[in-house]
Length: 148
Image (cartoon, rainbow, N blue to C red; front, side, top):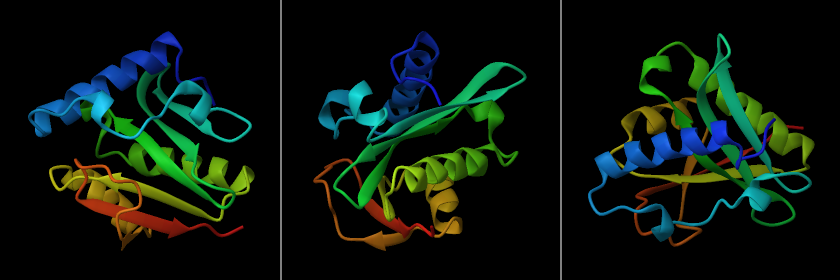
């Protein structure tokens, strides 16, 4: 676990923002629900950076929504690192952090122009739910109940 405001984490988030902006013209990070460093840090959140051979290739966070629910934030894996199961391992680490923090469910939002993310989340057991956060850029809101 790392802080989301370290240079490595900030660079990964810039790559995430660039990827999202390339898919959704007009999108900007200030138009979506927040993931400020304090929101994705202990004692209520978590931030994970994935490495391959000491090179950072991905990131993601857990943000508290309420006493029993948290939200996945800025889950990203560099294109060169995709297709090797690293996204699933990153997701599993985030889910484990959420369990340790005492959350019973994880939620997320994503858009229809992110088919690889939708595929990962669906295959990991996330199910569609109604809009829970008013993110106008999202088209899919999902939730997974966490097993203790």
